[in-house]
Length: 341
Ligand code: NAD
Image 1 (spheres, rainbow, N blue to C red):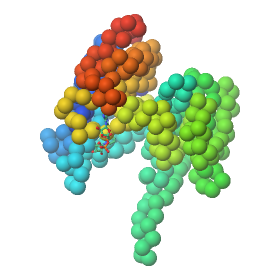
Image 2 (cartoon, rainbow, N blue to C red):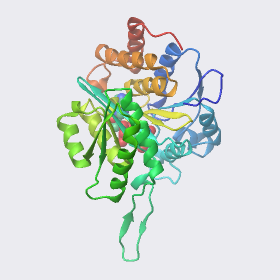
Image 3 (spheres, rainbow, N blue to C red):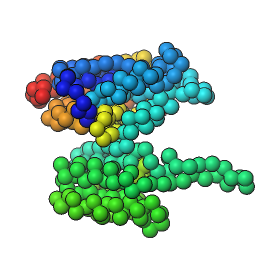
Image 4 (tube, rainbow, N blue to C red):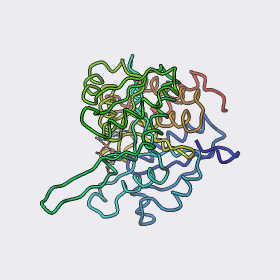
């Protein structure tokens, strides 16, 4: 959370592309209801930004995000730019890197399953040296500095402390040098958090257990690529990617809150997109970005209740985006939305 100003918290809303503006509208209405003191500024990112300015992350958007308390991002992407040199996704990756949003939180909740996957987002295999050798061999390298591991592991310990107190650290320490370092760092930090029980688990075993007994997990922390794969698996066993939110947090600067799904160009403009993942991302923003835990949890509960009342066509229902949004806001009134902080 940005703490640099005593003014009203400021959220930058990036409506994005495709169904983005449709789900962003519902997020804005929910945020205005739950946190009326928060200033909301809309800025361009993605294909909409390329069309208006020639670049997917205009300087003006980046500066507004840097000054924000938190960033609420709808999906970006447009098939028109699939083969272009300048693509919408470049704006998203650059925004994450510029804000150093290194801690990706992916909650997966359903029934008795409540797992929080904490994925390192700006290191490892996706950011290491890569290339082609003269003989045609292609390579990608996985590197981690101890400080990169320390900051994500500490954050995961703190999150586990506020939950059920079990931290599962996932690696491949029987094979990889980076994983052995990861394990040493976790063991070194563990004594700082005596209330948290730590276990180490190999990634193949973690995948199997997430698929067969996901309720055994509380917080799971892992490196970039393992987290990428395991978080989609966890979403799949708890209702699918379509409803999954995410938060990407930095230290001392704004985090980025966004749905996992894309811009759904096949249904854009029809008013039938499911706004739940965007609203769950808004709930994470309230909780982790603005520190308004009660408001965030109230919104998450309202999304669950609203989904049962007014499902959109992707869930076999007939509600429009606006109808589901209104049903969710109606549930907030029933549930008793907490007073603004
Ligand atoms: P997608 O998630 O946009 O769509 C996959 C399928 O799920 C489609 O049939 C779509 O209609 C459906 N769907 C997705 N979200 C939905 C919602 N909220 N309500 C109802 N149905 C929904 O994935 P895709 O088709 O592979 O990608 C489309 C574009 O989105 C691409 O340009 C891609 O690069 C981009 N993308 C962006 C992000 C992001 O902004 N973080 C993430 C993934 C994909």
